[in-house]
Length: 269
Image (tube, one colour):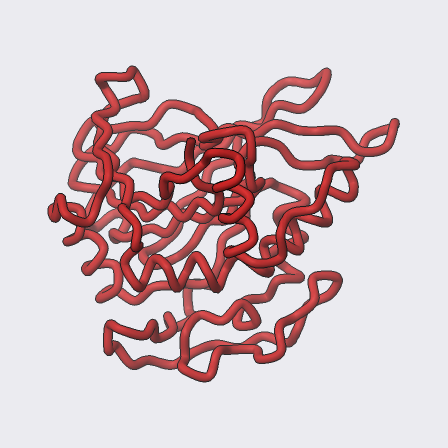
């Protein structure tokens, strides 16, 4: 998986090869496997395999979505206050140790592109989950989802960048933000594990009904995305489908700095 080359994103002028995978089922593929301008079109990912991994684990790793240059651009943005609407010092709220900053609207072009491109195939997975759980479907487009958020009083953008330094960590949590919750989100690693930082593994804990909690640990490489459950997902049980909750966090960083881009698809109240 790590051998894939990251695609080109418009606006950053960083040419590179794209990757294309045959259209998956049951998640339908878009008309083009990869967008004509070389952006990370959703058909460029193996959505059949990603959907199956999300069903099994609640977490799935993508091929690299961003080049090292893209990652450096987003890391540098962290120090530009004009790009963000809010900064959270985690220790102040007992969330952990570190900082995170929520982007303002309009989002940076790179972040907006990822959000728009990844939402439609994720919405198809989310709607399959909703069908299993007897819940209403989600809008098929990001614009539709954000319109529903606006109607629910959720108007603040949620994509963010997180920075951890030595000793930094993130307590287990869920990124809810309001009554309307899209059940999947994406985190993209912006640094090089074991080179730019050590430690800092992504930790997920699944709470199954009438069973002990199950941990999952992921170590994405630079530019690689992690798709994971925001709050709960369906898991087959003796009585049909059960809701299984997932929380996520970050283990302690031993050295260096760790930056992550978080792409959340519902807005905040």
